[in-house]
Amino acid sequence: MRLDVITIFPEYLEPLNVSLVGKARARGQLDVRVHDLRAWTHDRHHTVDDTPYGGGPGMVMKPEPWGEALDAVLAEGPPEPVVVVPTPSGRAFTQELAEELSGRSWLIFTPARYEGIDRRVIDDYATRLDVRELSIGDYVLAGGEAPVLVMVEAIARLLPGVLGNADSHRDDSFAPGPMAGLLEGPVFTKPPEWRGRPVPEVLISGHHGKIARWRRDEALRRTSLNRPDLIESCDPAAFDKADRAT
Ligand code: ADE
Image 1 (cartoon, rainbow, N blue to C red):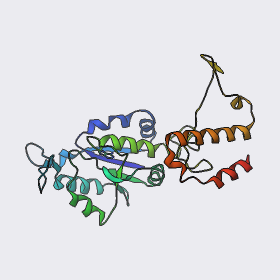
Image 2: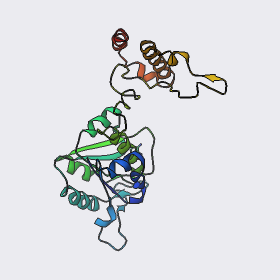
Image 3: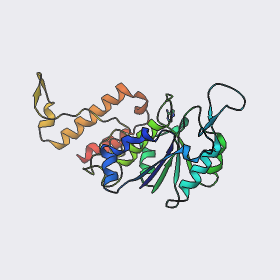
Image 4: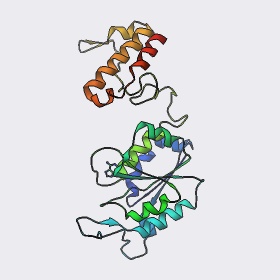
């Protein structure tokens, strides 16, 4: 998979050299290219922003550098890229979207600073490309670079061969399957007792059916506590079916 990021803070994307994403790059599973937006400015001060039409606080990113940067990057890669525009005003970036995007061969991220990018840039590319405006949550960050790190990590770990164990995301919170819609429950490792706290007995029982049932109950408990909104959209019939299978 190829990933391009166009930003005024290339150094903000340094973490893409570390850990899971860094290793996927080193193995050639991810081709990540970070571009400095200011390379496509032509004035002495490398200006990327200007005052908003209609007045108001803050600055808006100028369309010309973005247009030139996107044209230059688009000329290089495989066909049918998805352009991802991180913005708090976008659609929610979910596990489902991470899965969809992990199936694409080329993603171009355009993290903005200030009040965002001149609207005409998004409208223009949306006439010929798949452009997604995505938010990572209901809060406002100073720029889109941290959201890019979040989205790239969520997407990259789903690529075949990137996680050591292909089953690792089977039980993830938000993963499809018998626990769909539930948060992942608690996990334990050795020693069997720590500070007087034993590991739940069922987990040492070796009874796979009971363990699966316990995990499901814990997932339900945690979900009703932390995310009651998710319980609404669960399918109890799927749980019953999973119980019968164990
Ligand atoms: N830029 C600033 N805040 C953001 C958010 N919550 N999601 C995506 N991009 C953003």
